[in-house]
Length: 385
Image (cartoon, rainbow, N blue to C red; front, side, top):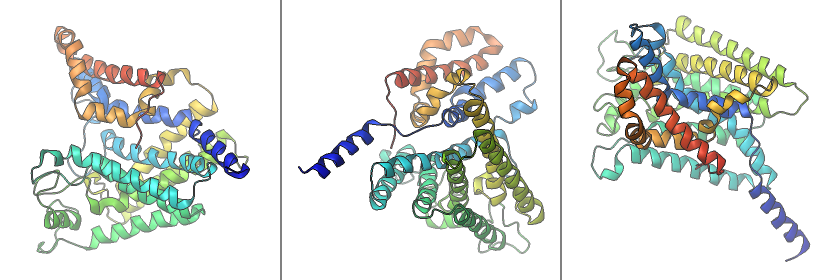
């Protein structure tokens, strides 16, 4: 081995041993996001029920809207996708510092997309070997949307070009949804209705037995990817801003993120009220994507300012272990491991708590997930694909 080869091997070893740089705010925000699907929503609705106000506004925010509208529970999935985009510039910089070529990075990126899609397929029942498994999934939608955004950012350095592409995705998707009715729809039919929108029609035509809502639609449709890819691109641009070392202060970065949230809110209002594009999460309409981007950018600005700028970090232990191992947290909840442990340890206590039982069940469910992932964090075990 010659000297240059030896130096290359040393660099590779150093890269393998050095983790990607992280911002504490990103892990804390991701953990905060996961809190609501690992027990937090049940905790809040349980408290409201125990206080005899089950229909309080905060309780109604803990469930998805049926079709048109926007609730806090509808922000969980988009924020997770947005944060996947935020994390990518840090990962990309780490890989480039190791000397990896664009083609090698692209292959690793595609492998991650494939892994997420396959895990999603397994949740959809493909391993049951029955013909009616679900084709798309939350993880599959994240994988494809993030993969498109990451690939574009791998080859395009100019931020304005990525922003223009995101805008083109939203504009093109708007035109498709707004002006293309499902064949056979009656005159004057609503192009965003369950039965008449073109996205659901394509789903029903191509794979009617592989939908989440059998025979109707899939809330993570393959044809809604333009909305998901646009949101992931917004995340990539936010990540680039946070990672930039051009002399911009941390406080200014927080302000720029907040300004981005304001711009997204204005664009969302234009789409919803001026262009007649309703907020439909199950279609990932442009107005929904922009409202989700507003929330995501605002929350990232807030967490970045509190955690990274002001340095107030001790409280993040409540969310950080879950945020650092968010995929494992999702799997623990999806396959029922966390629920089984919670039931074994705390079912008697929850029953004894009477009307506070649901709230206690939600709290202990999150504590089970948190304790497992805190142990994993101590052991430096993180599930990645």
